[in-house]
Image (tube, rainbow, N blue to C red; front, top):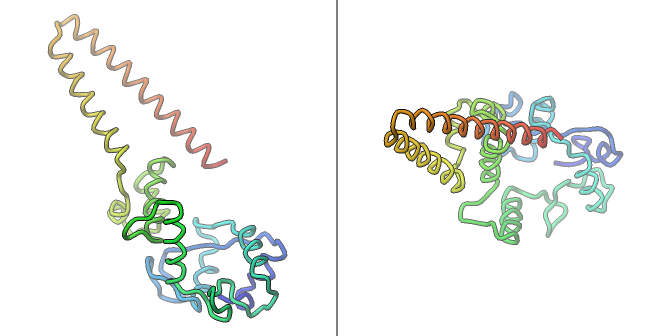
Amino acid sequence: MRARRDGLLPLFAAGADGRLSVGCSRSPNTGSKQGRLLQPHLLICEIWYTRLSLSDLDLVADFQWHIAKLGTKDPNAWLFPQDTDKSKPMWDSGVRKALKQAAADEKVDFPGFGLHSLRRANITWRQKHGGASSIEASKLAGHASVEMTNEYTFVDLERQRETTSGIRARLADAREVSNASDAERDEVRARLAKARGAKVSKRKIAGVATKTDAVA
């Protein structure tokens, strides 16, 4: 997009309290659906149509830094030009190339890694670390159904081990109860109930702390 067409150059350069929004619902202006990459000449329609959405991103400081780095005051200059030719805009292939290079530099690249990988990670982390339910994560992601969100969510090895350990612990508890006498069973049940209660309280405290950190 050009600075003159959407007014971003004077807006962000002057330090105005502007916000750039990223939407993922169907656009009435362009007809584009979620998951479809918008071309530069359509991007401005999507940006301003979704300015009041829940996906608002405060990018003022980032754009101030980016515009200063461009080193030009030409209102017709591209905000995201190609490295080899500043008169031409950067296309999605250039963005993917830069992302792959950054991932390789950080040693986190893998086959198939791309922008959509970050979206999947965001949806997963909202549930794992942000405490969002499947329904909340689905709405925040702009998905049509929870089933679609489930396809985006992945379970890492740490979580797999945690759930497996939990099952094994419950089985061990059941065996301990079955092998005990009546008096011992009552004592074991009381001890296990107390331990489970402490574990639930610990999870609730951790969840509140995570949400507090997210708000801060």
